[in-house]
Image (cartoon, rainbow, N blue to C red; front, side, top):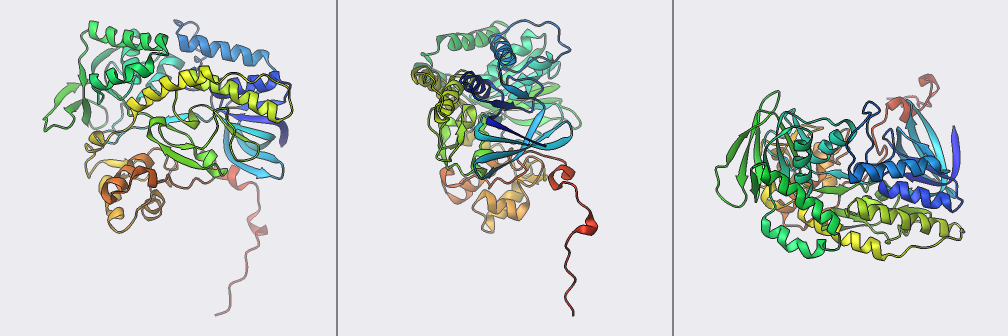
Length: 466
C-alpha cells in the first residue's frame, strides 16, 4: 500500500507538529508520522489514557494545545508509526513505515525531518544495573503515567534537567537521596547572561533548586556518580568530587536517574546526504541547515532539536519557520515569520546545552571493566584494544568489535567510543565522525524488511565445478 502527500513530517514534537500545522494551513496535503500514540514529543508528551486528571504544567498545557490544533486541522496523523527507511525515488520521497505490525509506503514531494534528540549517559561501573534510568526517561515516566522511578532516588547529571527531575520526584511524593551534578555554581553564574532573554524559564529553574534546598536535599556541585551498587537492583551509589583524589560519599537508594546531555538524532539526515559538522554547544554532530530548515538536498528540510539542541521553545518556533519555508518553496503564498524570537530562544537553549555537554572529568570515571556498548556487551578495555591495533574511527571500531551493530545501531555508545578514540589518539572530536548510518533506521521485524518471498524462487546459482 502506498499513499502520496505534498509533505511528510517525521516527528510530532514541538517542531514537527508546528511545521505540519503551518504547511497545512497554507493549503498543502500534510501527513505527520510519529512513534508515540499521541503527538507532543518528549517535552510535550501526552498523558496515558489511564490518567484521568493530573496537575497542569507549562509543558502539558503546550502539548494539549498542539494536540487540539492538530485534531482541528487538515493534517493526517499517523501515530504509532515507525519510519525505518527513507529513499529518494525520482521526484518524491518514499518512506517505509511500520504500523500495526505491517510495513507500508508513504510518499511525499517534500520531507521534513523533526527527529529530535536522544540522551547520553556516561558509562560508569554499575550503570547497567536494573533501576538506573536516564533523566529523559524519568521525565517520560512523570509526564505519561505519573510514575516514580523508585522510592528513594539519587538524581545525577548535567544541565537543568537534573534539577527538574529531582523536583518532580518530590512533587509526585518520592524521596530524593541526593542531587549530584558535575556543573559548578561558577558555571551556572557564567551562563546567566545568555539566559536573561528567557526570564520565565530561568525563574522555573530557580524554583526547582529552591525547592530542593528548602527540603534539605544534598546538592553535590562539581561531583559525579563514580559507581552504582547492586546486583539485580540498585542499592546505592558512590559520588566523587571531580578533579580530586576524593574517596567519595555513599548514598543508599533503590533507583538512579542519570544523564549527561542530549544528542541530536541525525542518522536520517546523514543517510539522505546532508553534510554534518561538529558543534559541542549544540550537542555534538549536527546537520548543516538554515534557520528555516532548508538544506542543500532538494525537497529535504530539518527542524527542531535534530538540528542542534536548543530546547522546546526554540524547536516550536523553528517548526513554524520550517513549515512556512516549505509552503513558500511549494508555491504557496505564506507569511514568513521573523527569525528574532527563534534566535532569542536559541541563545537560551545553547547556554543550557553548553552546561549539559559531556566532559572529560566524568569520562575518566569509566573503568576498563565498565560496559560501554550494552548491545554487544563490550567493555572499555575491548574498545581500547581495538584502538591500540589501529582503529581511529567509530566505523573502524564497529567493523572490528561490532560496536554499533546491535539493536540501537550505535546511537547510545558512539559518543563514549569517539571520546575514547580522541583520548588515545590525540585527534579532536571534530575529526571523529559518527558511524555511517544504514537502514533500517529503527529496529524492524526481519519479515517486514525482507518482504514476502518463496525461498525456492530465489535465483541461487549452481555451484562451480571442482
